[in-house]
Length: 45
Image (cartoon, rainbow, N blue to C red):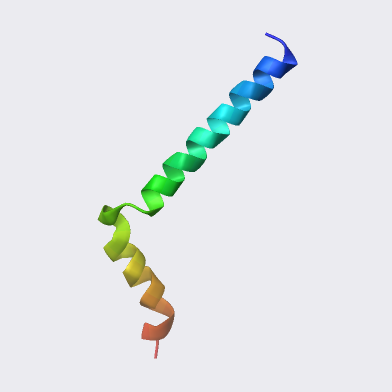
């Protein structure tokens, strides 16, 4: 395996990780917890 193959594998792995994080952040299952977290600074007295 040469350096160019390693670079290609690293690029593909980074892209897959990016897509996975993006899908997790935009999933409807997390929407409620993200909305609650967004309101935390305003809930403090």
